[in-house]
Image (cartoon, rainbow, N blue to C red; front, side):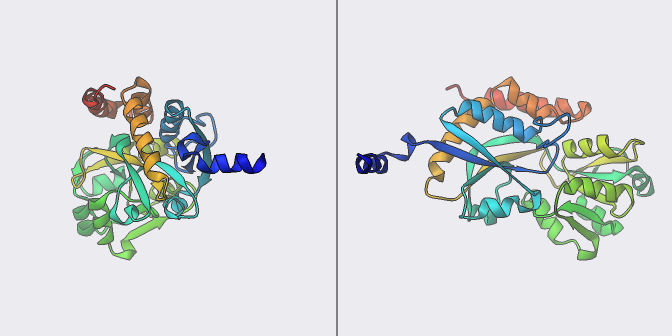
Length: 284
């Protein structure tokens, strides 16, 4: 009887067996809030929660990694992991399969800067600047999170920055470390996203020393995708994730998740894009 059961299991297609997805969580607020009053309210966590409801045949599992190790582990063939909201790059595509449907949408990267530096450079709050010109003309030091991609254009600009003007921070809560360095004048600007800078400012900047600058070399919006380790069963998984993403992106819950960590004054810009995206999503 045991041999018969084993033989039947071997003949069953993968889709009829128990299916699971192991999601990578990282120590990077406000995308993942791993402790405190807002635990579980991270933007990317909430997308995973929506996908869990949209894919009832899957068992969701989780592994928490340092942000600096996430892409390395996602790319390793030793495990089958998936991760929300990553950029597509040719280098990553060698080891990672991506969804066609985006999993997150937000405003493009911005620069956090001390207001005293703004005054010194005769710049205005919220002004749009060229990051290339800003760094090379004024010899500013840029702080970035290690092993993180900001898209082809910005990654290319970062590659041109002299090492002495670039601080790459690995480990736990890298943007928090960089923001502390910014407040202590150990770096001049930090690169992140508006919601990240806003979250850090709420935590660390009680006397409003910091502001943000938008970047000319970026698009208005940034989209991230689900990436899964490239294995034999990954294409089938990606197809199911595409269908689920198309469904959840038309919901109010998805829009709420995208807007939750964005400053009030910036929400209308993203709201317009979310409405357009929802209207462009075909029914069924």
